[in-house]
Image 1 (tube, one colour):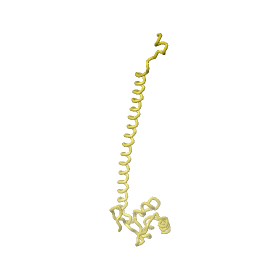
Image 2 (cartoon, helix red, strand yellow):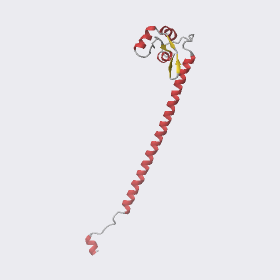
Image 3 (spheres, one colour):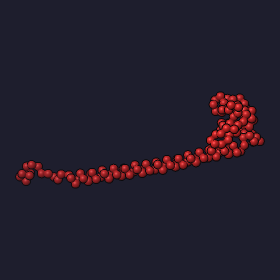
Image 4 (cartoon, helix red, strand yellow):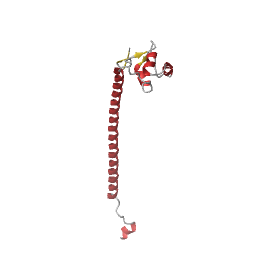
Length: 139
């Protein structure tokens, strides 16, 4: 038994894995060569890896207690925990996006107000219709 994420992982032989998962030994060796499965120093395979890699393709032998429900439940709990963390992360990102969108709206309003103030000042300080030089002298 090796520790992984603080939990014990079940190790089984290639022959046992072949029976339990309904796949040939050749298929298992192929997955090992592809790097999808790894054998430990005793030549054993990790049941969790088998569930992850072959579980969806193979036919798990229901009568086998090697791949026990505790192991499957453990993997499910890990995945459920990961999903919850991702949901929280997503919620936080959505809050951040909403805050940023609000800031953009606020800045647009500020810009509009400043633009209006500048135009107002231009109108207030617009030179009055100045008379021409001759008009002022002879006007």
